[in-house]
Length: 114
Length: 114
Image 1: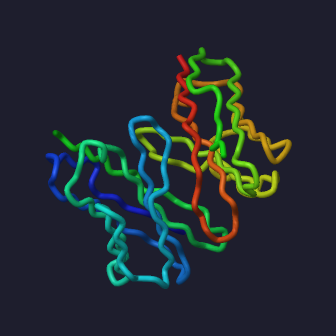
Image 2: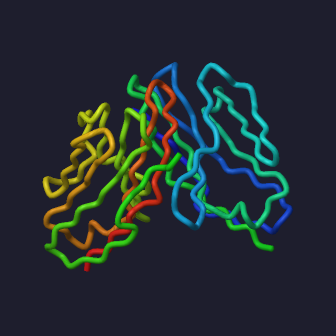
Image 3: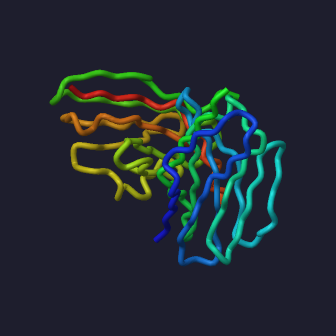
């Protein structure tokens, strides 16, 4: 079984603030993949990043960065200098169990105020 | 290339009516997924196909729900008869397969059952 917990239902920040979205995952497998997706107001989910369980290196892409820590089963997502366009629902997902079909968390709604 | 195409984008129907949602995956993708998104339950996997064959339909809520994939470029999700609790956004996603797990989502079909 696999599961993702996104404890933050909604986060509200003012533009230019840094914000971290938490993700805690559960899986019995040693090989798995972690993902973040963004769902803007238009509705479709957009892939942001994938990490495999053997690569704990943190990743930075522009204002986005991801912190993967196996010791705490966490895969947190930080947006630096947030912008209004970052307002969206963000989903964390884990894929394991041979079929590698992602299971999504409940999502965190990020609201960035101007 | 065109992304995943879903139709209709919005559907309003009355309880008891048949609803058919349609999906055209990205050409060359071997996997097709149907997800349902509600406030109460988040994103739930309903069923997925590999090479047009249904692999796991354990997420289909009831016998009222059925899904088909007659060929590599088309899938349907049918609800008959529909009920108000079926109101949700239904997403179709496709994946190139392998152990990537990265899904490409359509814009969703918002279903309202009165």
